[in-house]
Image 1 (cartoon, rainbow, N blue to C red):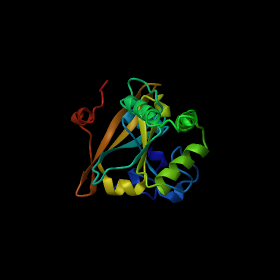
Image 2 (cartoon, rainbow, N blue to C red):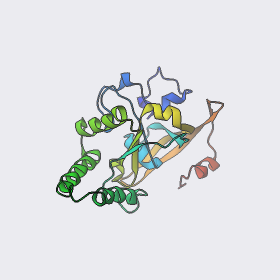
Image 3 (cartoon, rainbow, N blue to C red):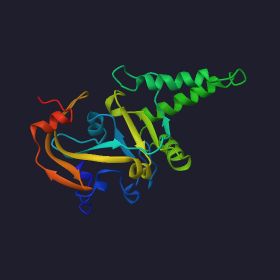
Image 4 (cartoon, rainbow, N blue to C red):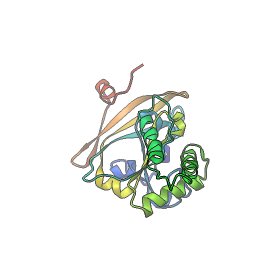
Length: 228
């Protein structure tokens, strides 16, 4: 949200809308420990705005990013085996759960219940753990910073698991993600299932610079936003 951007930060710099400086991270997040930065993003604007905890009348920025990877990215799935059907990733969580079971040898069958219980503990922590996120932040830091994992996938608690959150290592963002545009908006309605907002401006990326301009009706259509 705009209120969280320091007066010293430049809104003409793409970095301002990506991952924060470790120096300003004074507490754990769900997928980062104190003073360690990650790039948080989602698969839909609704959870992105909800996860930012903005209120009615607040102004925020929504970055539209695209993966342009030059290699296969390594991920850790923290998705449970059961997700709401409207979640586009629900088959993904089920796949990884079944993969764990099917790949067990006869010798490993005795420890399978423990592995399933451990998997459930991890997925539950990424959905339900409260601040200070001691467990989920520790797991995320272990994989992103110590095990060469590029990104984590976990359900969006703010959207009741209808959507997915991602946490990227900052260096992966610099090398394999590209910001396409930035949308400035003002929240005018919040419900459990919907966020209403007015579009205030668009920042187009041209020659690695942010060029701000006024919004048009076509912008909302191009971004997939529904007009009411």
